Image (tube, rainbow, N blue to C red; front, side, top):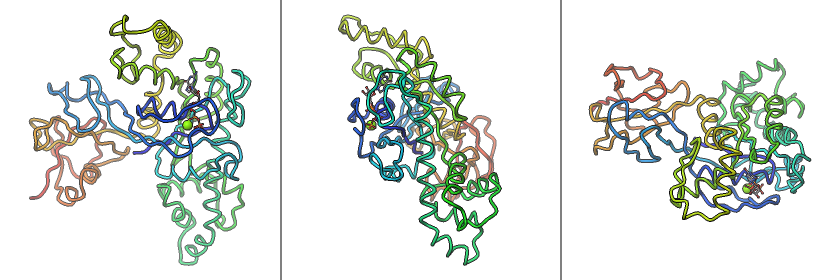
Amino acid sequence: MLIGVVGKTNVGKTTFFSAATLVDAARENRPFVTIEPNEGIGYVRVKSVCTEFGVRCQPKYGWCNGTHRFVPVKLLDVAGLVRGAHKGRGLGNKFLDDLRRASVNIIVVDASGSTDDEGNPVPPFTHDPVEDVKIVKEEFSKWMASIIERAKGKIRGKLLSGASYDEAIYEVLTGLEISREVVKEALESLSIKKSPLDLTIDELQELSNEILRRGKPFVIAANKIDISGAQKNLERLRSSFEEPVIPVSAEAELILRKASKAGLIRYEPGDRDFEIIDEAKLSEPQLKVLKMIRERVLNEFGSTGVQDTLEVSVFNVLGMKVVFPVENETKLSDKDGNILPDAIILPRDGTVLDLAEKIHSEIANKALHGIDVRNKMRISLDYELKHRDVVKIVTAR
Ligand SMILES: Nc1nc2c(ncn2[C@@H]2O[C@H](COP(=O)(O)OP(=O)(O)OP(=O)(O)O)[C@@H](O)[C@H]2O)c(=O)[nH]1
Ligand SMILES: [Mg+2]
């Protein structure tokens, strides 16, 4: 499960990435600081199942605080873009290739409008963030359109050997992990009946837009919400796009997580507030910043928004679910006695067999059926699991 962090240059992508992963990476108030992509692990929260069973999780990855289990997801922070990136402007769009494996992309946008078209710092509210989202979405669809355009030779070959239109397009997009179903639905929804070979670049862009909408959705992080007045742009972004728009202060989240790591405050990602451990250990300026974060961000918006953005991406937009496989259905453990060691993210329609495959192909080969640990009922391999199910997979010896 890979989440891309994308957007115009100098809007806070790396700050968002670092806040979510605690990976240190260069950040500065100027365009094109990030060149090579940064990769790290963030977490999505799932209401703990352990407490329900009167045990305590011992996660192999991530952690559990008794209320929430924090389940790892991979994040990729890439170089920023500017209008015309598909034609090579700025750093071009080579980095979009790094995002091929991303299931969803978070568009970070500067909701305070303090960077211009090229990512240069300007006074707040002199630039329209709605434009920035439009540019990013456009550059993505132009990039995909150009992939299809360049592969027309290959498409011709596929069509000659009997492939249908959707199959031929699907085949040239395989590296992007987009399903054939998505391509088919996109063609149908646009009522495209002619051969892909006859589609103009504009038509290809329209098709790409539709494929992205269905197969690689966006979530919008309205960043720098701590700057007063940014809320107005939040509303404008919400009424301009169909994607979810979440108020975010990446800078606030990064400060809180670092302070928590240093033992200065008690704070976990997604919390509505923090608690100062020992005021004497904090300097005046530090206290002032924390107070500002509490007043301008947490009290106003309920959280810094970083965690919400990840969770809306994984659960609401992609419709993923998390299930807990165990080997011992009484102790809820693996064979070494670790309690609820794994939390596996599965797609919306993920079955017992899909879970087995995620664990190991050998387990999938030998799987006979599952057991729903909550009610001890036998479930078939094609049973669609529910979010937070605890499952034992029974295998042939
Ligand atoms: N006020 C405020 N500033 C922020 C926030 N997030 C990021 N910034 C600032 O925005 C500037 C750019 O941040 P980066 O994270 O480097 O931005 P980027 O989008 O990764 O930039 P490039 O990699 O150069 O494209 C830095 O000066 C950050 O401190 C925020 O939530 N609030
Ligand atoms: Mg960056």
